[in-house]
Structure formats: C-alpha cells, structure tokens
Image (cartoon, rainbow, N blue to C red; front, side, top):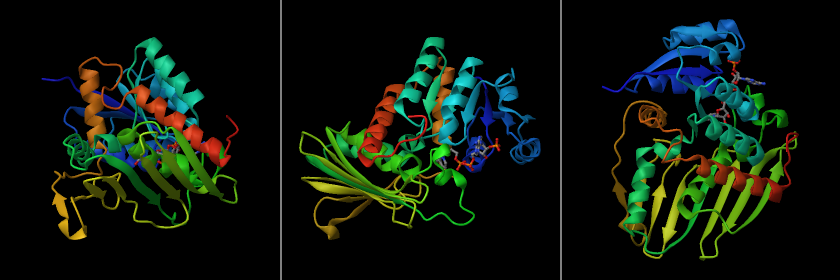
Amino acid sequence: MSRKIRWGILACGKIARKFAADLQHVEGAELSAVASRDAAKAKAFAEEFSAKQYFDSYEALVSCPDVDVIYVASPHSHHHEHTLLCLNHGKAVLCEKAFAINSRQAREMVELARAKKIFLMEALWSRFLPHYQKVQELLAKGKLGEIKGILANFGFKPMPPVSPRLFDPALGGGSLLDIGIYPVFFAQSLLGKPDSIMAKMDPATTGVDEQCSMVFHYKSGQTATLFSTLASNLETDADIFGTEGRIRLTSRFYEPSATLQYYPGIVSTRTEIPVAKEAGWGYQHEARHVQECLQKGLTESPVWSLDHTLDLMETLDRVREAIGLRYAVD
Ligand SMILES: NC(=O)c1ccc[n+]([C@@H]2O[C@H](COP(=O)([O-])OP(=O)(O)OC[C@H]3O[C@@H](n4cnc5c(N)ncnc54)[C@H](OP(=O)(O)O)[C@@H]3O)[C@@H](O)[C@H]2O)c1
C-alpha cells in the first residue's frame, strides 16, 4: 500500500479552506499541520479541518518533522519568499498560482528546488480536472480539424468587503495575475507560447489592472483572444474553434462546474460531452497528483512541469510589459 502523505498548509486564508476541505477526498492524505500568523486563526482552522498540529508562524511549520509537503496559500506577492522558506527546510511544495510575481522570482524558486532535488509544483489545478483532460483527448482525435483559435474570459465583481489582495500592488493585485492567468494558461497549454502579444489594460485606482485585454498571435495562423476583469461578473467561459467545429467550455471553464459542448457544425448540431463529476471543489485532483509524484520519488510533475510554469510566468511578464504594469519587485 502507498505511504500516507502528511500535508502542511501555510496561510489559513480563503483558498486554504477549500483545499483543506478537498484533502478529505484524497486517499492517503493526512492534514498534519497548519500555520497562520495568528494563533487563534490557526487553532480554529486546525479544529475545523482536523489538522493534528497548528502553529502561529510559518517558520514553525517548515521546521515540523511531521510534514512531507506544504501547500503555500499566501498571496502571490509572498509565494517566492514562502516557497524558498519551505525548500530551505527540505519540504516539498505545492505553491498556489500565480506562482510568483515575475519570472525572475519563479526561476529562483525552480532553481532552488532543482538544486536540492525537492518536489515543487505550481497549483495550476485546472490542468488536472477531468474536463480539461477530455478537451485534450478530443483535440488529439482531430475533432476540430485545424485549430484556428481560442476565446476565453474570466470576470467577477468582488463582493464587499473586498479582499485587499485583489487591488493592492504590494500584494500583486490586479486581474491578470489573479484571474487572467486562467485564460492565458488555457490558451498557452493548448496552442503553445504566442509568437506575439497585443494587450491593453484599464487601471484600477491603485494602478493595477482592473481589466486586461489580450490577443495572442501564432505564426501558424492561430489567435487567442483573452480577457480578465475585476469589474463585472462575466460568463467565464471558453471556446476552442477549428475548421471542422468548436468545443465550448461553459461557465466556469477553469473549474469542475464547466460542461463540455461539441459543435461539429452549426449551433443545432451541439452535443454534450459527458465528464465524470465527483464531490468537492476540484482541488483533490492536483493533490492526488502531488501524492503520486511524491510516492514515486519524483521532484517535478510530468503533467504540469516547472518548465510549463516558467513558460507561463514569462508570458505573464510579456503581457505586463505590453500593458505597462510594473510591481516594486520587478
Ligand atoms: N486555485 C484557486 O482556485 C485559487 C482561488 C483563490 C485564490 N488563489 C490563490 O491563492 C492565494 C491566496 O488567495 P486567497 O484568496 O486565499 O487570499 P486570502 O484569503 O487573502 O488568504 C491569504 C492568506 O495569506 C496569508 N498572508 C501572509 N502574508 C500576508 C500578507 N502580507 N497579507 C495578506 N495575507 C497574508 C494570510 O494567512 P494567515 O493570516 O493565516 O497567515 C492570509 O489569510 C493567491 O495567490 C491566489 O491567487 C487560488
């Protein structure tokens, strides 16, 4: 039988709660310890999700001998610092997206993991969802003929009280790194790195991008038109289209709630493609994959590799250069 994997969670915010809930759907996963900068928050989190230990500092968590892998769930402005902290204490890491603020930080994280031969992966959870795998199968079977492009959007209007993380430049705020990363990931994972990028932003009052419009061009004649906004609730859906048809991922294309529709011709030819659903938010798929990698002694995921992460980070840098958005650490 495979050995148990002992998880630690660094930072007890919103996404950490969903991840902790989903770990309960992962066979062989044990939530061993959690850490918050606030002891009462760590204690309440540990009680709610049955973690064996809790700490009031991230340093205590990374020093805990009962933890194999740490899920870094702090704001993206802190992923570099917190991932290096974990790696320097010999802990494997699953780091939330955006992996870092820029590709310089991302390279430092990857280089340290590779030098120390410690497992590191970006928590690009959509890559592990059953419907994404199904899209790949359909494309591999040539269902769309020659692929011509992608249309994808992600928009939501944050409800008060608005998390400071979303608009504060010091916390890596802005739509691109928070949600625009999903359309960019989707296009890049299916079409590859764009040959050229056109992009514009509409700034929020804090100077970060409230909205970001992107067009990726490929020498092969493909185009990806992508959009993110923190000003309005959009469908957050995606289309992949080709000379022989179209695949539509309905709202929200990046999470398990999406359904898959295949249009071989005009709209009335639509068929639904069945995709297996299971209980949970959907984070259990990436967690299972991390466990399989650790059990096999891998230091990188063969599915969402560190090179994929670096490529994605470089494209995000290129978009930011095009829209003129710089953070203090750039
Ligand atoms: N995969 C997904 O679907 C998904 C969804 C949402 C967010 N995310 C990503 O997950 C990360 C966290 O997002 P979130 O929505 O969970 O944010 P959040 O609710 O604000 O939680 C972030 C946590 O980070 C810790 N933290 C450490 N230093 C901080 C600082 N200087 N300022 C604020 N918080 C600090 C805090 O935990 P303690 O107080 O406990 O120390 C805080 O609760 C982001 O990178 C985001 O892009 C991913």
